[in-house]
Image 1 (cartoon, rainbow, N blue to C red):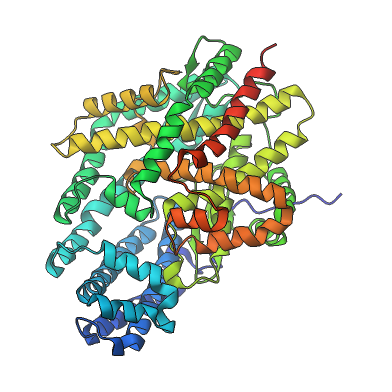
Image 2 (cartoon, helix red, strand yellow):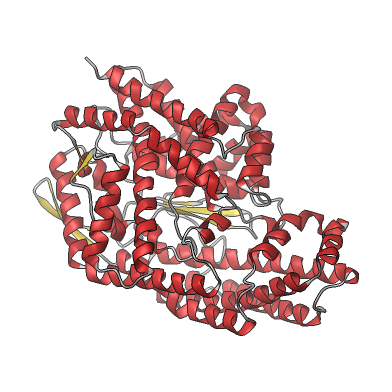
Length: 598
């Protein structure tokens, strides 16, 4: 049999030849600048308020905005990839600053457009949106008009936009740069290893408990040493966000993230209410697993440990073959997509130092491709990370035919395709298992995901809520942040996690993503939502792929409540919807207890 080999280092030259010194990328930036200048001229030519005779002008304006977003996405994705593979790439860092300024200029012009929409009379506005030319943009235009900053003058909006480049967003970039430059010294099998943060975190699933403990406390020691620096970063990010929200008339820290996720507050609270009701089965799982490892309660550094002697080392080629085989059972399009990703160098998986610690998927909408970044060290957890990011990439693929303005879907839906992809692999691995030990291994990995979504994400949500409440009063000390983190973990885990990392607020990158506050509940939403979708997919087989693609394509042009009602016929403001997905997860926990009872 011919040995199959897949590239482990991605091909970025196919996007723009030459990396940070690419002349192609320079041309791309020039075209982007021209588009933004053209938008500026189009805005000036519009009459305020709008009249029904200006439909064509509005259409051209909207199409130009959509094109700019595509060009911006292409540029920011490329720079993100360059800095992930080499955080010390100064050319890429310089380009990042240049793109940030262009984006700031674009956001100023977009704010002007939204102001024009606000001042347009209701009857004229309705008439414009009823025209054939603007029908496909109705949702996003309504959203712009509804969510526009009515309380801020154009000058104030411009000032905030300027300050964000070297203030707000710069703090988030500084965090990423700082973490990527940290080296962690860990003793493994009597030999001191010098690892990146990403490599050290990967040791959480190492088969040797001593190595897991060593990695855990080595990281904790580093975070303790640097806690003052990180506390300044998170305080400045939150402080800037609070000031801007106050200027915009936003009083609740949740208001903006809910709008960005196109979600009602009732939906969010109902979801957490159901999750809070079903903590006990997962606490039972954690206690049982702790007993199997050798303890009365689950220590944080043992959470990702395996409970059986199932095979640990998985080659990248084996993972690629397994993923492709089982994706193919759900449709020809997803099969062809994943083959292309593996064969054409879309994935950066090499296990080497001096890489970024954070896995991600970057979309390149102009060329219809994506790039997946991770460090693959041969564990089943790595396989799940890989397939998770490939799910994001497939969502990008599904959106190829959607116009630029309607491509943007909320974060809550962004985690749906990635979780759906994980479910395919979990199910396939469970069916392939031919012993009790292997079934326990897979079931344990699946339950880890449930605990992460129902307990870990809940702790992040609780922490962020409480941190913002205190930050609203003033600067929060590192000591107090540690206390808030510990309290949130204890509550979310119902006291079932021992020696938790009180520095979770440091090494969890989501708190530092300046574009996305409260990037925690979208994961949990996506997880439970994906369970419902996956159940329907198993019922219908390959026939479901058409429906799945339609759902993903609609994800950028309606609220999550309407999306679920349209494609699943479910009301997500009711507990009944969430309890269906939760019941499947509780069954996993009960099955684990049953299998380990002897």
